[in-house]
Length: 203
Image (cartoon, rainbow, N blue to C red; front, side, top):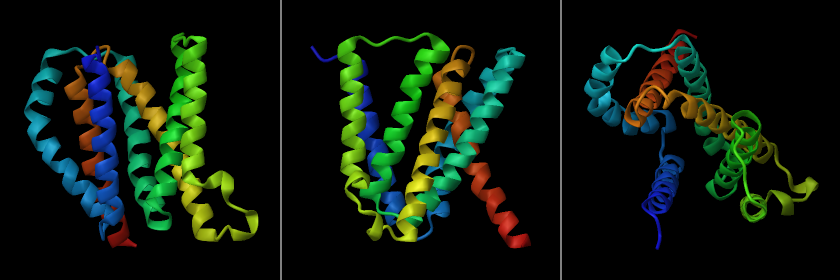
């Protein structure tokens, strides 16, 4: 029998791929990403405020929130840049593969998580498959346009950011609910493009 957690993971992966597809097709990626996150921010904001008033945050948790916010801000910026330079079919598998690899390895080192031999084999197969699908291993050096190389670099940075905020969120949910942790992400995704647009306007 398929567990509810497994079905939720599959559904989450599907919806994540869909909104990334729409982001790639959008004319202004900053505006599009801001628009899809402002709705969730407004809906969850009352719940988030109420929980913050009821919970006495530890200093460590606040630090995790700051680090997570940094990684999420960088994720937002470099995701837009990656899709501006590269194809979705190449950049998306690379960024997700990098994130999966780092989260798995760092979870073992930092949190003492463990995988069985079958789990490690499956991990390696999924990781290899993602990078093979991206086409990076089949691309010859003499065909590497600068735009493609830049998109690959941005995609790897996005994967690092995904791993960073995922590991921090693992620690944050020990004191805050998953909904409040999600709202932290939404707030970051609303603030970052706004501040970026202000900086561009002043320059």
